[in-house]
Length: 141
Image 1 (cartoon, rainbow, N blue to C red):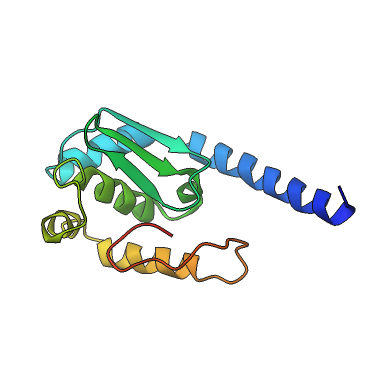
Image 2 (image 1 turned 90 degrees about the vertical axis):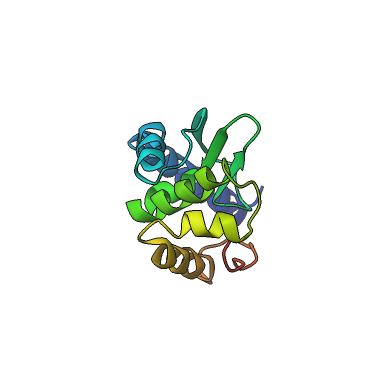
């Protein structure tokens, strides 16, 4: 391993540790339950942070009520995390990205603002990610 490769690896590991520390301070389960109650959405069976989510901000398995959110969200404003959680909770009602799903997500007061934030983060040329831009109405980077 070259010195440059070692530096890149060290930076990546330091970033992972920072995200874990940030996400450990946020009770994502309690937050998801509160948002479900406030927005009339089903309560998830499980919610957890994931460190290896590189293609999406969140995911949901409606069959078992499991919600996963990228630990990268811990570094962003709380309303951005809340938007992603509401988006995923809406999948417990509507499993696709159709109009019915969008209508549920739009009840979140900062939905448009959060989508814009996530688009802007994804378009940052200095973030080191090689992830394609967000699609309108979706929360995948």
